[in-house]
Length: 300
Ligand SMILES: [Fe+2]
Image 1 (cartoon, protein in one colour):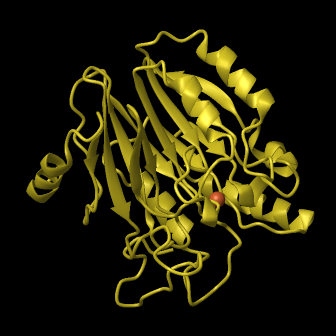
Image 2 (image 1 turned 135 degrees about the horizontal axis):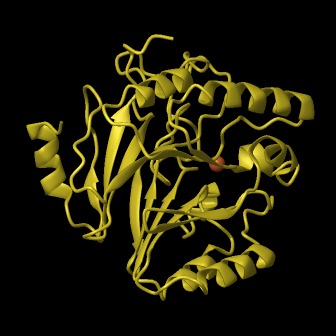
């Protein structure tokens, strides 16, 4: 059930760029589902499994597990879960990479949602061009349909330059050729497709080409990760929404001299971390975003 405070927040933020936001919710997760054609999915991102650093996250081995428990405890099961990359922390050692992916898969295997869509981040895929990732999770770019919404997962990380690449752009072009201009399109990806802050590698080198291909479509929303914080941006009528991390929060672009994780604050554990759900209101072409903190009560 949506509380009064949530409702106020909802109204305050409603209507930005065709997407309805609701964030900063505290307390028990819950959601009211209006209309029988609507659905929702959960977005998890940037769990960096294998990261170690007590000053950044002393619960590095527990945060993802807590998130899985909290998703399982949601009042209404999501239709599916998406994981927008950096599932694991990067390593030069193939065996360690495999071990991390295996562990990650086991943990996420505890989700009681049947369908989970994975995507790689540069931590998972840029060292071996996605080879190990594909062994564990399958294709790095793909499409699927859900209740009339067309989902497209774009890989902008397997190429170590942070590009989508001409081959995949051609695939995207061909794939979009079959879609009606008024279709509901959701793009899932890891890096921002626009130049959020290239100095910190918060960009996709040829992201503008993907945006150009998406421009003729009226209803497009992009959900991504990589920057470890919420960020909402419009390129024309296309809305871009980044998600928080499940390992370490990052500062606002350019707010610190270097791109460094925000240190753990024991007064506010898990601050800046969490997951969100995205409620699709297909009839009125809106998405509602609910941000959930990590709940300390979800003991590992
Ligand atoms: Fe990333």
